[in-house]
Image 1: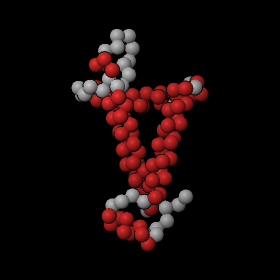
Image 2: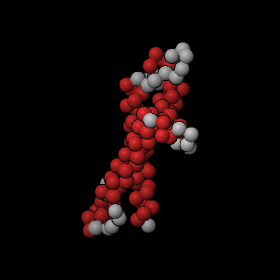
Image 3: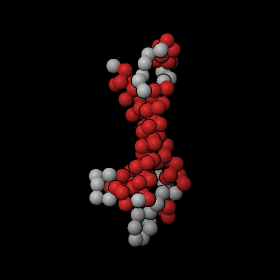
Length: 115
């Protein structure tokens, strides 16, 4: 799929709205993230590869926010023997942050592809 300029694209640029190309890039990035996350969590396919730690990317944001004092981990982050899982707020914040990150990345990729 190419990002061709259409007559409506100049209007979209003026308003600052993303085009369909950026939407497809964003969907592709989010789908890739979900597939890699499922492979890391549910199967041994990624063991002993450089993608082995990919499952931790979902937990990175709640743990960073917990360090800032936000209540995003179960039991206040005190699980006793291991790492505490995020609570509902932690999962929502993590999903929102990754969706926003991939939105910015898709817009940047589209901008680079246009040049």
